[in-house]
Length: 398
Ligand code: DWN
Ligand code: SAH
Ligand code: ZN
Image 1 (cartoon, rainbow, N blue to C red):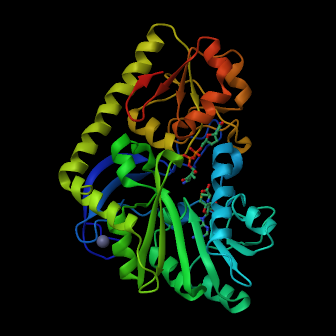
Image 2 (image 1 turned 180 degrees about the vertical axis):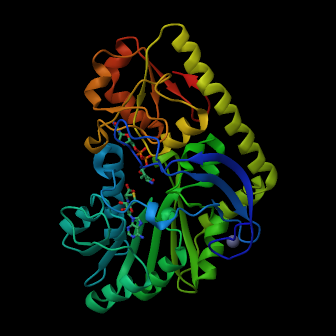
Image 3 (image 1 turned 90 degrees about the vertical axis):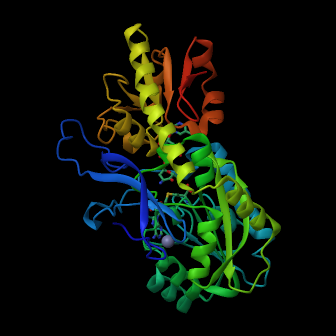
């Protein structure tokens, strides 16, 4: 039986996707057989209610270098992070010599705006980044204490799509405690379990996403480590997220939105067995419907191409049994993915030009979280008669 990574109570399994490769393990053609696999399964802590992966990836299989992701790739995400930075500049960073720290800055999209405003900043980012000040290290108690000693305390520690990846989350709190000013805040945004259940977006579940936060579990986690959940905010990005603001216990009065979200989660029984079992049934439904639709369209002689070689699509393709016979290739803007094969499924990844030469009849939108941006950009595909296949929140053609 697995134990909760936060409070060490037992974790009740509610879904098993079977054996999966790592979502970032794009392979080179001819080398798919020796891929590492692990059991992708998810459960809920019977005590603090944190939803989490059941298995740990052995450290030797974790990817630390050359993270194949560029946050600035999406214009919507770039705007989101610039607005986030401006928000901090006008709220938490107004003192005499403010200091903002980010965990997992990726290509530096948020801190660039902070730096341009002349505000001191530093990112903990093991995979390196350009244009902003980066400490090439994982954020933990020791690295945070070292930065505190050298640069003084931080007013804000911010992390987007990163805290849910950090298995030893206690280290994040140890680091935050060492590095934050007495009134400083730890702010993080990650996919919200409530949205994942509402949309059956089961593809958010893969090796990198260890935790699926809720207000209730985050509040319990904060209290466990001497912090307090002071604010929550819904974000529309990446299919629905919550931004959590944590302060040291007793330093800030929690906003009304915290109580509202907690009450909403209670009312709908967000982590009750019936809710989680309903999610499991909906996921199984997509495993029936999506390959069936692809097979039917293929049998009718239609061409189908995948759009966006996302980390999420590793779960979809491997769980639903979708390979090159159903989707001959996936196009993606990320150069390091080109010429590679998608993990497990072996579907080749091609540059975006491959999409239009010629346009397929159908495009399976793996990057559904960027749907608005992508559909706007690909108007010509529609005009050429192309249709999009979506599987979130259900399988359909638009
Ligand atoms: O949570 C995470 C997010 C932030 O990034 C990480 N754990 C891993 C990764 O997840 P993902 O790969 O599922 O993220 P995205 O943002 O859904 O990936 C979009 C993919 O689609 C990228 O490979 C780029 C590509 N893309 C494209 O080809 N054309 C994206 C856009 C917007 C486009 O127009
Ligand atoms: N914040 C960006 C990137 C998210 S991807 C965005 O939202 O688009 C997660 C990033 O966190 C990767 O760039 C990875 O290298 C980094 N990362 C993972 N664990 C980390 C840790 N313990 N400390 C610092 N960075 C970490
Ligand atoms: Zn727990």
